Amino acid sequence: MYAKAECMDAAREVFESSKERNSITWSAMITGYAQNGEAESADRMFLQMHAAGFLPTEFTFVGVLNACSDMGALVMGKLAHGLIVKLGFEMQMYVKSALVDMYSKCGNLEDGMVVFRRMPDRDVIAWNSIISGFSQNGCGNGALELFEEMKLEGTAPDHITFINVLCACSHMGLVDRGWIYFRSMTKEYGLTPRLDHYACMVDILSRAGLLVEAKEFIESITIDHGTCLWRIVLGACRSLRDFDVGAYAGERLMELGTEDSSAYILLSNIYASQRKWNDVERVRHLMRLRGINKDPGCSWVELNSRVHVFVVGEQQHQHPEAESISEELIRLSKHMKDEGYRQTSQFSFNEELVALGEWHNEDQLELVSAA
Image (cartoon, rainbow, N blue to C red):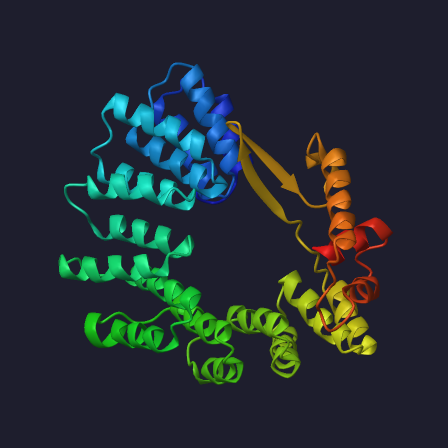
C-alpha cells in the first residue's frame, strides 16, 4: 500500500519492523522501489534478499529487471537472467517480457530478440517490449517491421503499441506515415487517442520542422492536454531557432502556470538569444515568484560491473573521482579549442549563461561552450 502510494520511506519502516519476512514482503519492497524510480535501491534490496537466503519469485524478477532497465545495468540484468533460468522461471510470460524490455533498454537488441523469438506465445506486452526497444535504440525501421509482423500474426495492438510506433516515426522523420498510424487507431482498431499519442504527433511535426503545423494541431485538440504539448514545441523551437513560435509556446506555458523548470529556462534562453534582457528577467522573476527550482540532472553509466551515478550540483551525491573527471573534461575542452574547434551558434552561449546567472566559473563557461 505504501509503495503504491509512493511512500517508500514508510514502506521501508513497516518492512524493517516486520519480525517475519518472506519472499512476498521482499518482492513488494523491490517492486515498490522499481515502480517509484528508485532503481538503485531495488537492485540493492534484491542483493540483500539473495544474501539473506530468500528465494525470489517471478514477481521479484520482474521488479529487478525493471530496475535494471531504468539504470541500463546490463551486467546486473544478465545475473538476474541466470538466476531466472536456474530457478525455472524462464517460461513465465511476464518474466520473458521483462527480459526483452531489459535487454532492449540496455541497448542489447540481439539478446532481446533471442529471448523474444524463443517465446512460444507472444502477447501484446511482449510485442510492445521488443517494438519499444527497437524504437528507443534508433532502429525505427526494425520497430515498424515488427509492428507489421505483429499484425500479420493476429495480435491486436493497444495504446502502448501505437506510442512505440509513433515514436519510431518521429525518430525517422516519417510525418505522413505517422499520420496514417495515428488515424488508424480509431478507424481500424477502435482506440481513442490519448494524450501520449497527441504528444507523439506533436513531436513528429516538431522534429520535422513543421512547428506552425504543430502549433495549429495543439490548438485544434479538444481534450485537456495541460502543458506537455506546448513543452514539446518549446524544446523544438529552441533547437530549430524558431523564436517566434518558441516565444508563443513559452508564454502559453507561463499562462498555464507550468511547474516545469526547464520550460522557464528554455523560454529565458530564447529571449537571451535575442538579447531581450527585460523578458529574460521577467521569466526568471516569475520562476522565483512561483518557487520553481530546477531539478538536478542525473545519469548512470555501467563500467566493470559497477553502476556509477552522476548528479549535477549535489555534493552529497558527488562521484568519488569527480575532481579528476572535471579536470579531464577541462583538458579536453582546451584541446578541442587548440585543434581549431569553434562554436557555430549564432549567439554567444557564454553571454546567455552569464545573463541567466547559471555559471560563474571561467573554466565552466569554457567547458560548456566547447560542449
